[in-house]
Amino acid sequence: MDKPDIMDRIRHIAKPKHQAVLSKSRYTSFCQCPKKLWLKVHNPEEEKLSADTVRRMEEGNVVGDTAMELLGDFVEVTSHKDDGTLDLSRMCSLTAHHIAIGTENICEASFSFDGNYCAVDILHKVEGGYEIYEVKSSTWSEDNLKDGKYEKYYPDLAYQKWVLRKCGVNVTGAYLVLLDKEYKREAGPLDQNGLFHILDASGLIEDEYSKVDERVPEAKKMVLQSEEPETVIGVHCHNPYACPFWDYCRKCVKMPEHSVFDIYRIGFPKAVGLYNEEKKSFDDIRDRYRYSDGTVGRIQKIQVECTLDGREHIDRDGIRDFLKSLSYPLYFLDFETISPAIPEFVGTRTGEQIPFQYSLHIMEKKEDFDNIRHEEFLATPGEDPRRAIAQSLCDNIPDDVCVLAYSKSFECSRLKELAETFPDLSAHLMAICSNIKDLLVPFQDGNCYVPAMKGSFSIKSVLPALVPDDPKLNYANLSGDVHNGTEAMTLFPRMKDMDAEEFARARESLLRYCELDTWAMVKVLQKLVDISA
Image 1 (cartoon, helix red, strand yellow):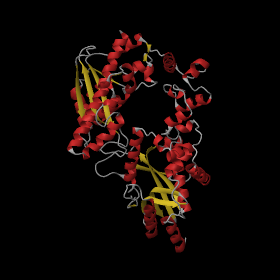
Image 2 (cartoon, rainbow, N blue to C red; image 1 turned 90 degrees about the horizontal axis):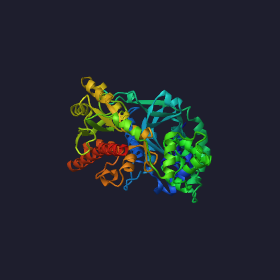
Image 3 (cartoon, rainbow, N blue to C red; image 1 turned 30 degrees about the vertical axis):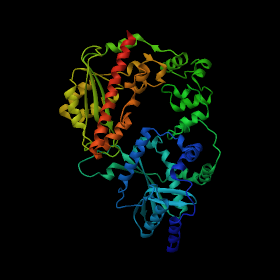
Image 4 (tube, rainbow, N blue to C red; image 1 turned 135 degrees about the vertical axis):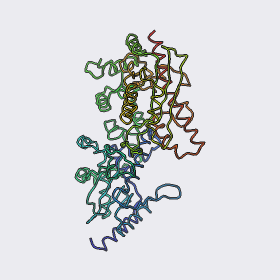
């Protein structure tokens, strides 16, 4: 390409003629569901982002920032207006400037063509053109590639390639930058080459790339359309992402109060199949089909029957068998963890669950609910918490007592990891692990179900169902910023940068939240004892 062509291209990038109508996020929303795009533009207040989704978005930003230096020295063109919003025009101008002077790596390289905008995480100059690198916080594995787990990223990359080529940029390759889950942090700076795995997606995105020309005008039409499109319920509502407008669309189609999507562990694709076969409600499942086709299992049948009949299902013998498996003193244990995508501590891997807090309620005598003491641990923010929490567990939990957890696989996994990390504490930690009983069992086994559980056996569903109308047991009534595990794992890492007043408030929030988790277990066990009497 001769010099005049280069300058024409740069002028086009720097001065986009049309206001951006489509971006990467809008385009990929359209690919999942046209109505999702329409709602994002015309009815954004109906978007419901879960705390976990917000956390993962923030995590993605951290991973993206870390990856900027993956290919060497770089320039970032991110710019903001006075109101804090992105200055897309300036970002495009800066991108054009750095292309003109031959900058090798441009992060957030921005392009606009005919109302289509995109920013490339890393634009890498090579002989004859440029490579685009899209950074994701997902972990790499051959199995994930074979199972199509990365296909959800192909429309994103394909759209970027299309916009850049429309701007006259010769895209020679398209790559996904993923986290290597086998990378273990060592002392010193991060090893970028070890932390990240680069997947050549140039050939993988060709099918998606061939669809962009046709999809772009349809997506723009959807953006500009004033009339709300028809709601279509399907697998796309949860694939490749759980749609944040799901609750709104449920209302649009007037979904039954108790729909097949609310059945315990039904699986979204199966629920969609039933819904499209006109098996939409609990009534449809029971009255029209009588379970004859194996639609639901035993626990699911219990849920359907109890909900429709307004009654409880109690198997006292099953509950008694569970209670007999417990011994005293009884220790109620719950962990809170962080799982940094970028390993912070020596010896940890990407996404590893690292316990930083626990709560422990202790009942010395059998079913003596009036005499219970409490122990707790909260690590120092910014420091590796593993040794301190492991030692505290050994100090507070004898190696020969019965321990109760809720969904014990989580606590057991953390104890095993700590035991592997600290050989001198291994015997004690593994003894604690081997003595753990699971309070989830009587619910998962179908020994106790009440309609208020609404098909969920999480502690936050079981507790208010069994012990209603107690404000002290309502997580929503907790003062401070922590009301669930996601908020806990988000708040704790931020504490190291807080002033004294913020720190004290955050610490108290974490302690009271975790304490309620084990106190909730105490109250649930007490209810089971009462029920079985």
